[in-house]
Each structure stands twice: as C-alpha cells, then as structure tokens.
Image (cartoon, rainbow, N blue to C red):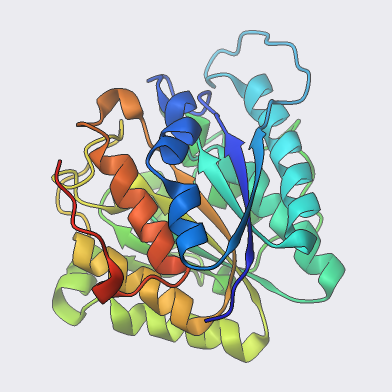
Length: 306
C-alpha cells in the first residue's frame, strides 16, 4: 500500500447554520483516534492544529446567518488548503459544511497551479447547491457547491476565477433537496445519485462511473463526507438528520473504492456535532470511514463496543 503524509487541519466552523456544536468536531475526531488509525496504516500524520477565521466584523444581515464570519472562514480555509496540498493529503476536520466553501476553493487553486482538473465527490443527504439569494433558511452550509460552480450572489466571498465544471461533480446519497435547488440542478450536468437509485442499482456502479471519469482526465479528487450521508440510526451526531441514509456497509464500500482508485487528494469530514452524539459513536464511525479511505480493509476493522 502506498503511504501518504496525512495533514490534519481542524476547522471548527460553526457559523454555517444556527444550531451550534460543530465547533467541537475537530477535537472529537482526534479523541476518537484518527491519528492512531492513520499511523497504524503506515501513513505519516502531521496535525496542523485548529484554524481560526481571518479577521472580520459581524454586521447583522436581514436574511443570511453570519455571512461575514463565513467569508472569513472561507478565506482562511482556501489559503490553508492551497498551502497543504503540495505537502500531502489534507484532511479537514469539521466543523459544518460551510467549511467546504474554502476547502474546495483552495483545492481548485492548487489544481489550477498543477495543471490538472479538480473533481469533487459530495457524499451528502443534501445537494448544498443554494446561493445566498435562493436559500430560505439563510444557512450558508447549504451553499458550497453553488459557490464553487460559479452560481451568482456570493458578493464579498473570494472570487472564483474558473468555476468548477458541472461534469466534474458527483453528489451521492441525496434524499433532501429543496425545490429551488432541484430546479437549478436539473439544468446542470452534475451527476446526482439519490437513495432510490442506490436502492435499485447499488452504490458501486454510479461511484465507479465517476471515478472512471476522474482517472481518464488525470484529475485530482476532493471528497467531502457529511455525517448525514449516513443513516441517523448509525450516525446520530448531526443537526440535519434525514432518515433513509447510507448504511455503514455502503459507506465503507465507497471509502474502499476511493482507496483502490488512488485518486483522492483531499478530504473533508463535516457536520459532526459531538453535543448530539451517543458515547462518541458517530465520531468513531467517521474515523473508521477515513481509515477505509486510506487503506484499511474489511478484515482489518476493529470490533466496537459502544
């Protein structure tokens, strides 16, 4: 197995929605043994600690929740991602999904510098394709894919010079999409895989099609894993639970296929809210999934007693 330098970057982002608690996520991953799990696989691990947002002032906004803080986090995370990618495989420990506004933007910068296309695999119950104008909730954790693909309305955010092409994005695990997002997505070439398709055809085929496209293009692959990709019965520590999610078996298959492909160049672990967890079980499941993505096989997996 090829070993890598795994760079842990804590992103205690808690401004993307109104329900708090995700700021505790980075340290929960560390407590759940992420470093040991990666080192046991032979990887080197460099923990760069927890980031802070760039300086900002926080004026009120009639609709959006914490836009100035979210912009400040986007700037800091884009800088951190672009700086870490030349040194290894960064793993961003969230933090809510607003962190991906910055991590994907930074990965796009590095990919452009490297002369390679960036692809994004979004493992999530939600499409996160809103804009600041289309969101009813005002929660910016629902906007990252809208931002990086160049949708309008992101005034004040770092400018996306070259938008991520729709065909370079796959969203797998969908089961809660707002009408405005659905209408917009239907006008795109984004690969969308909802739970009905997974139930009917399995998860390996659509993922395999996407990975084949990444490989054929010589692309880099950013993976963004949201806790709510999983069914809440096995991963309760998320403020946006949607029943009917992926099973642990399906999730491990996705991660093992990612490892087998050798394509993943950066990873987000997002929306973990330890305040809502049960004896750390969600944090442990997410650590186990990260380990599968970095080479742990099914017969190497430890027995858990919760």
